[in-house]
Length: 160
Image (spheres, rainbow, N blue to C red):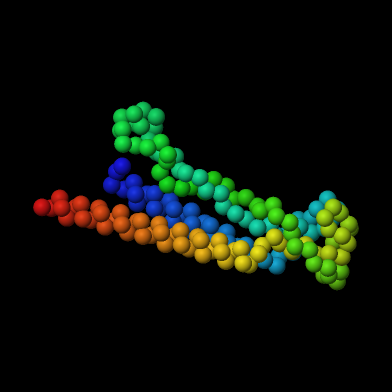
């Protein structure tokens, strides 16, 4: 494990959590967006759909031969990356409001005439995710500071 490996791992975590916080902010901003400009086959408006980040471990930057040259390298990866941003497939919230311009004009599967589909965003769930992302971000900052401190101490020891 190199001097900057721990810092790179923490940096990847910081970047991933920042994207997660951006998605949460976008979800909260669109909590009442009932019309995204797209329509179903029956002509009813499609509401905003909650977005979620999918994380996976970031592969090691060493090539296959490099792994065998350095016995201390693990194959589990170094850090985290965002694999995809997916749309949550939970049901939309329905509310009867026939005077709303976004109310269903044509009955279709799951939405009767006169009902408005609201996004599948729940403020409580978004706040829980935001707290979790914030804590993860703070943990990565702490790990980054520990790596910097160890590197600084190693340099001080090297000075003699």
